[in-house]
Length: 222
Image (cartoon, rainbow, N blue to C red; front, side, top):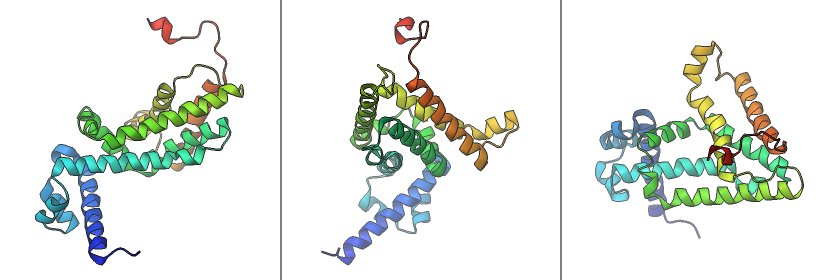
């Protein structure tokens, strides 16, 4: 059954507001963004914004949810399900890196929310549930890899994800300062491709290498 025109208009209006809000938050941060600027960019009245959203914080949380949905959609649990463990891990590494490359607002919004010590993420049950599923996906890939003798045993899926994400996130969020320091255009396509290959190589080399005597383990830090 087709949606009624009024419903379609409401959805379009909310999308316009959300798109304008994301642009403002990405440009000015949470503290710098203003509702007046958002409605001006969206070309809607302030009353209409408050009809659909409770205010600036509500909008910001909704944008954060969209950003994390983008990240998780691009990582795509479905895309890795059914692959053998090695290919699934390579795909997850590549997809995580590519979303940071192709969706720069993701990095900007994550930087902003970290400045706020995840105060707004803590008010969203949606975001946390997304990452429960990610941890389960990683745990299953690792389990299959262990059973097939492809991956080392005892890898923590959360620690692994932090490493995968960090290898891409740090590079891209700091590309301008690092480019200046090392006189290398890290945002150039050839360097982006090299970094992606480097990320995959580091993760897969770690997972497929058997622990050796003398290797650092969490127990050594206790």
